[in-house]
Image (cartoon, rainbow, N blue to C red):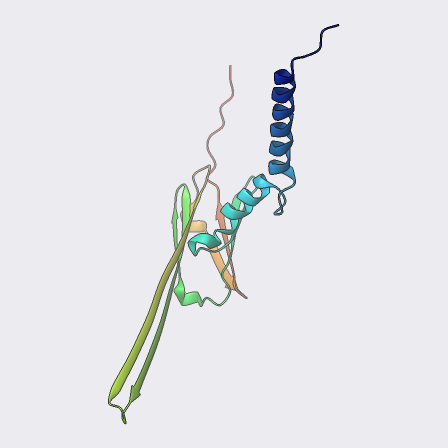
Length: 153
């Protein structure tokens, strides 16, 4: 019986090492695996200064819950179109201080705008949509538009 050349053993071992490394990358990463980390990245949207949004639907309506802690109702703008919803939060802080002794005037302003757009798979009935904001949670309910069902002859 012939022995494998040592070069073939090295290639086989290298390939097995690559396979084990790929398995670890997708399953044993410190953040629950690469795929879970990517999912968390896109749903939380924190790297972009956004806000987390939960989206569900049933046969009658779409339900959107946005977590907006510390935001006032007046800072929220909603735009509902037939196949998407955009939630925009405008935050503005102004700080002014006048020092009469040093004849100095300090002014500081922070303006921030965060926005999330949620695509919808079916057209909606926009005029029947309702939104509530309580305890930092924005809840939006949008009824789906029903199409005509045809029977096949």
